[in-house]
Structures are given as C-alpha cells and as structure tokens.
Image (cartoon, rainbow, N blue to C red; front, top):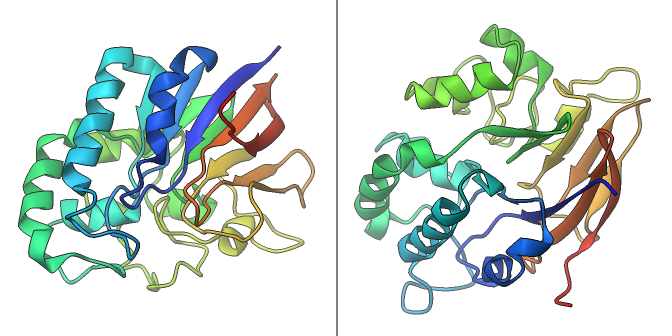
Length: 244
C-alpha cells in the first residue's frame, strides 16, 4: 500500500493548507515545506501571516510526529536576525514581530525530514553543502538548526550567490539544476528528495535523470497541496490534492 503523504508547498500567506486539518486522517504524514511569510498576493488586512503559522503549529502540536514543519528561506531571513540577508518580499514593517515570533518557535522547525529514505526539505540537500560542514546524515543537518546555528543555512559566505545557482547552496536556497548537478554529475546528498522553493508551471514535476534518484518539485503559484505516495523507498505516485 505504501505511505500517503500530504505535502504543503510554499505557503506565502495562503490559507489552502487548512484542507490538511479536514483530511489529516487520510494521510500517514503531513509535511509543510516552509516559506510561510512574504507574498505579493495578499496584505496583512487579508491574512495575518504570523497568525496563519500559529494556527498551523497548533494543528501540528495536536498530531505530534504526524505533522512536520520545515524551514524555508522566507522564514529564515527573519529568524537569522536583522542582517542584510533578505530575500524578495521582505516585510520591513513586520520584521520585528515576525522575528520575535519565530525565535519563540525555533524548535518547531526542522531542515530535513525522512520518510522511508525519501527526504523532504524546502529546496534540497546538496552534497557540496553537506561536505562544507562535514555532515553525514539528516540528524547532523537538523542538529545544526536545533543548536541555533544560523550561518550554515545562509547564502552568504563560501562563495554562495543570491540566486541559488551554485552547487554549494543550502537546503533552503539551492535551485533544482544545481541540486541535480548536470547530466554526468549529481549533487544530491540524498538519492530521493521532495522539495518546494522553485515554482514551475506544471506541477508536481519529477526528475529522474540519474539511476535510482528522484527529485520531486512541488511548489506552485496556486499553493495547491500535493498528494504523494511512497512505497518501499520510492516515490510511486504524485498529483495535486483534490478534496474528495
């Protein structure tokens, strides 16, 4: 039968994730890929993004390990403090409120989550990035975050660029082509990964250019949820979630 996973791609102020609350019993796990903040599609009179995430965390805490919250770059640029590292859509008028809230719920976030050797993260875990920090597995990666380490996840330093188009980019910032690494080389730290971060016109989209590797892209402009089935460590099915 496999495991059925409901993926919540980049939120950016959307309320579509709420469908997860009504259908939680139909899934083995529910995973938010992050990016709860910043949007050009709503303002604070329509959706208070802090309260939106508070509501999700309350839902997460009811279902404990069944509901997972991963960190996105549009969450990170508030958590990392008032540094110059800011992505598009950074909300100056709300930055202190968001910063204080996110610091209070720091431990609710993970960087990567493993389901039967399929690894979920916001943008994808790169071999080159993992090598920079001598990381061997998902526990090493999540421990960096739990120890309140900020620098390893930023795009500054180590020759990182501000577009994500580099093999050394972080799990909240790397782009798919840099993660895949090209035809003759792969930069995938984990062989099978599910990510958001890069919205594409047709979704979900599965790359299988290398033997025994899968990269599933879930982010989309409509903020639609993605229904993924994992069976024996393989992504078997993936589609837009529709209310039944």
